Length: 295
Image 1 (cartoon, rainbow, N blue to C red):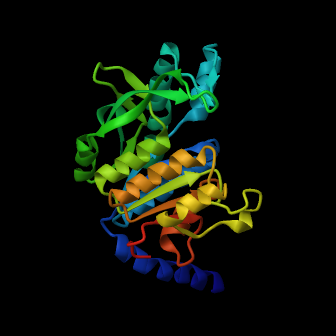
Image 2 (tube, rainbow, N blue to C red):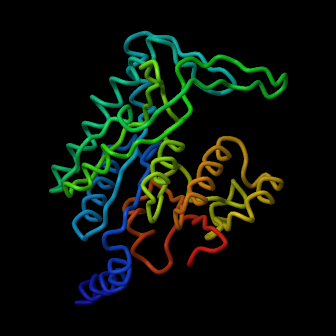
């Protein structure tokens, strides 16, 4: 009987959040090592279906780095890095396009629908307008070619809006197209932020490889529960935010400035972490908020 009561308590705790976020549009960025464990992928997609079933309106934006790397290796296409960024040559961008759409996106949609959801794949090529970007050498300051890697110039949400209007959950690939029709690889974190901003989403949730933003990167007990955007410059000076986290944080701030209420960074390696963040009083990970947002 005790276990049943505990389950009922969990449901009771979730009730106000279900009421609060009914019909809310929530963008979930799914990527990193959380996509390397088949059981975690299956569990996460079931959690997305649960959100859909109780009246939320989730939008999934996903990566697929491991699957892309595996296919490049299988085709014996050499990988070259420039300032830590993978150079995307003409052969590579074709592999990225193929794998993201025909392997990763298709599998996520299949798993969600297998769990009783109503998921539909959406190509980022129909959503994200892009232009070629360059890497800047940290020492010389010179621009360096990284191939067909793009920065987002505009977002057209009509394809996503159509899927949402049909009562389904969009699952979006992080690819963009230039004015000349060239396909560009887009950073999935940045894609999620720009899409969330364009959709005026209520929340943006990153399923990442760490428990959140930690004051001491070596100590998971130092996760900072809440960060206001005004605190970010000081955290950068203190090196709490550095390296690959900076582009993500910059994109998060931009999304918040565009009207998103909160951005959450949570550990995608933990089962049901998405539900724990949204449906419990304590939550998990780190939330980033505007000074004027309601906590």
